[in-house]
Length: 471
Image 1: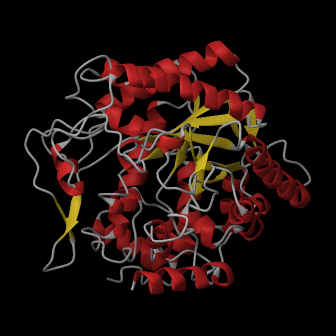
Image 2 (image 1 turned 60 degrees about the vertical axis):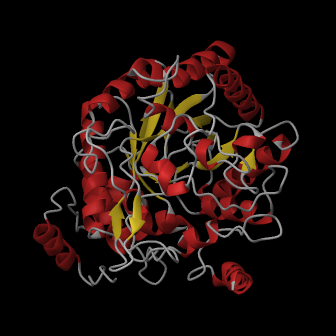
């Protein structure tokens, strides 16, 4: 279903009014766009050189031992040259059994040298173009994939609607409190390794339904890590405290936080649209979810948790939402779904509006905590117009893009130098990158993910191979 038919900014502005997407507003003056995007951002003691970031975009192209491989190095070399001063390094597992796919990065003694070289390649390419990398921040995202780990799922608790989506038996074991306590130390060990590899910042990932994210919504879990919000944030509090105790202030502590989980969707066989799996009311699951209407967010607990995270040492927050495995339209408003998935049940502009509305409310509630905004890629060439307006009005501190960075890694450079993006290169959100992420029938267990339409030389042959071998 085609939604993006806008050739002029005025047409898109009219659509926001027609649809009621009142939080999507634009700056039309290229010079004002340049000025807004060029503004440095203070994160604790560190000064990021501009207000543009790249979200953590997994290439699923590492080696089986967790090291980055040729395509990983290529991606971060391109990102380094691209002009963004915040490059959020992709999900890196703290343990082998915490990986979401067989080629996900994994930090351990054996991969440390190559992860250090990956950072060096990114910094070197940035320095070659811009003269310095001293104002370039590269947080390394630390993760455990939990329910989506391979080869074995690790559940924080049983959510019957999510279990139904993935056919998880009701008696499938849940990770114990003692195992979680041991996992805290794995995060601390990973943080120490990241520091040794030269990273200035780490991200304690808590989004997209992975283990720490699922713990935040574990209202029906028994024990020390479930039930009350104090218990559900215990793991993060302990990890941050242990890192501080071990390393002091040597690392900038960041977090990508899923602030609204939503409910699982499936494809309606008649219409092709996404429809929610039947859910109970009240809905006692998930984080940031209104128990009386889980199709809508409730930020009460989210704000309390963020206040605690800030108190415990978080200095940069990346605002995320949704779970790509069961409601991708919430986290990544798209024009076209990946093969076999559902069509968006809402106009993507309403999904963008949700991102902007929630991020703005949180940033205004915590003005001293810089936040990174999400949800811009569907706006295509007009993304920077919306970003400039959000930055100028204080709705967000950093504007970042994910999918578009795979298609157009130098989008930041063009935005800063020209005040506009090239429509021939910008991501169309047709989800080929996600399609590749979902293809597991590769000899290494995972096809590399990238942008076949705009990075054809590399990913064109890869998607052809993925489709041919799938057939």
